[in-house]
Image 1 (cartoon, rainbow, N blue to C red):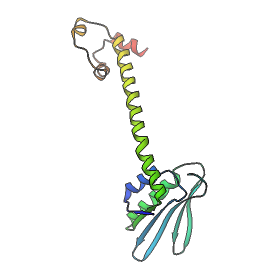
Image 2 (cartoon, helix red, strand yellow):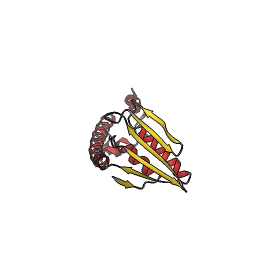
Image 3 (spheres, one colour):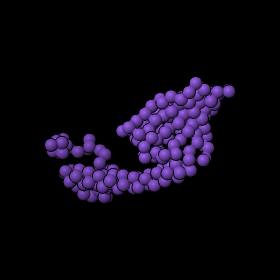
Image 4 (cartoon, one colour):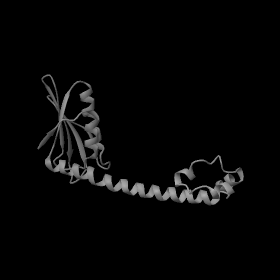
Length: 171
């Protein structure tokens, strides 16, 4: 098992990015001679159902649980760890090797694919929008003599378009 030291936002980012694993995650917080344990426990085969357990000398409590909101337990645990740190507690989070591998895979792979898809859609939308606006604009001597422009330049200034053309676009 790996022991990792996280602070504030880093803890929340890792816990939220991590898909569930049976091994779970355990945050141990200490202050002077006191210890608190905040643990995400998966009671099923996947991310749900889950519970956030809080242990101290007086016993263990279930602070939060979820049966149909993936990521809820991880978010609540991360926020509680962050709150403990704000009160001056030193916290470390232990993650099983299996869970760390799953985190690494889920954080690295989807981000690249999503970014490529979004950029492709954005370029297509920009080109389509620019072509539509260009088709609606009246052709003048100055416009026909001007060099060809890119989509973002065509899409920006509507104040240069005559009022009749603007009305036609709005309809």
